[in-house]
Amino acid sequence: MASSSSTRMIPYSSSSTFDSHSRWSWDVFLSFRGKDTRRSFTDHLYSALIRCNIKTFRDDEGLRKGKEISPELLQGIEESRIAVVVFSKNYANSKWCLDELVKIMSCKEEREQKVIPIFYHVDPSEVRNQKGIYGKAFSHHEENADEEKKEKIRRWKAALREAGKLAGYDAKESYESEIIHDIIKEIRGTIPMVLDVNENIVGMDSRLERLLSALHIQSNDDVCIVGVCGLGGIGKTTIITALYNKISNQFQSTSFLTNVREKSAKDSGLLKLQQQLLDDTLGERGQLTLKNIHEGVKVIKDRLSSKKVLVFLDDIDN
Image (cartoon, rainbow, N blue to C red; front, side):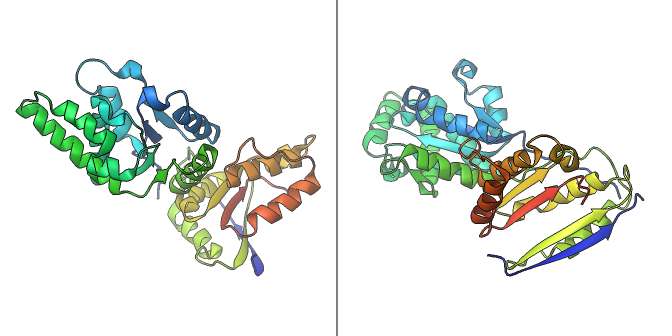
């Protein structure tokens, strides 16, 4: 529980150019063996990612044409911030999956892509050492292999060896719903929720620095409230959006509530804002439904008091 709170008001008036750009087109790339998990675990995981507004590239078998991995798949891997690899019993039987994994591990080294392995009813040591069912798969790959194929097999084994060493999730001893919840939580903590900034404001950098100095982000004990005030149309929303993009990855959870004055004046408006705040910060969209404002106040206090949370309220009147 936070021990104290402070409030600061910073006047703002319109006066270097700010541009936000990301090299990632996707938040997550899903690599999996379709015949094993497409209609089970991977489908449930994909649905959970979409519900949480996590932009996910799901490998579509329609993109698998010819002998080589398609340009669309290569691009999808390269442009994904995170790769989630579902190692299942028949994963190593597929040269497509193995080619994807080689590309993923390359992007991990060259593009700092985060890789999250899920060991779905296979032991991590089988993946890492190509033993058991994975060993049998490679025995098949190695049959009548020419030098070009042998080189490819060496790359496949190296990728499996490195991926098998990574911290991940073992599905053998856990409920799938619990694993998916934990994966979503980890992914949400990795992705900075970047918002569009459509305007270029002169003096943006100096104003951001002023706001940062007022926030005391490194403090773990205080509740800090900072207000940005000024005339309408001078760029207050733009400056706080830029601030959100800059610091959101330093918090466990975040929420950006827009048009608060207008929404709160409507029927059940405050209740809907409370619901959005909890959906954003808890990562449980659709699993918790508030009945009234009083319940919302209690749930927010109970669930968020021990978390480091960043909340933006845009356009308020008091």
